[in-house]
Length: 217
Image (cartoon, rainbow, N blue to C red; front, side, top):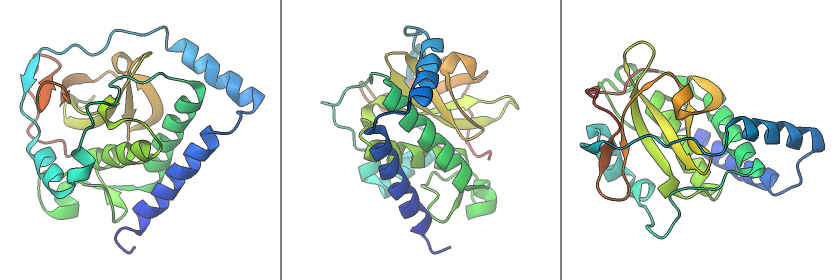
């Protein structure tokens, strides 16, 4: 695949998702979305910040290569209101990226333990999936300030990257391991750290020691 062609197709898909969100939801679909939102509750407690944290080295390198992807407008809201149309956009982008990219470790892909990228050649690992979702959602109108790249320990005890979306219904997680968008408490992960975007580069979300890399598929 020619480099960049896959991401351009997904960018067009993201724009199409936004256009879909601007239309009227079908009655049955709208009812299902409303029920899903109701199940999230009225706003669960956000992931607690316990201090400052060092950013992942590969994140800093990514920001040097893709400065515009890391630029945050402080005037943007850091929490979004979760409407049925926004929920539909989030779920659609999560599924589209998960279903369109080939999972491969950075060691297999690039010959290095950890590299954060946008999966422009059609392959990537966990953080590449989430960074592409972040890009598409930003192009669909979501503020980057409300989206936080996050490091967790997964069910295998390995480092893993997810995308946290801060909403009035609580912090939601987009993950390449599932097409379900879940509240952070329901993922089963141990949350380590995430982008701060307010007071520093990254913040700690617990007392567990962070992984050196987030390089699983």
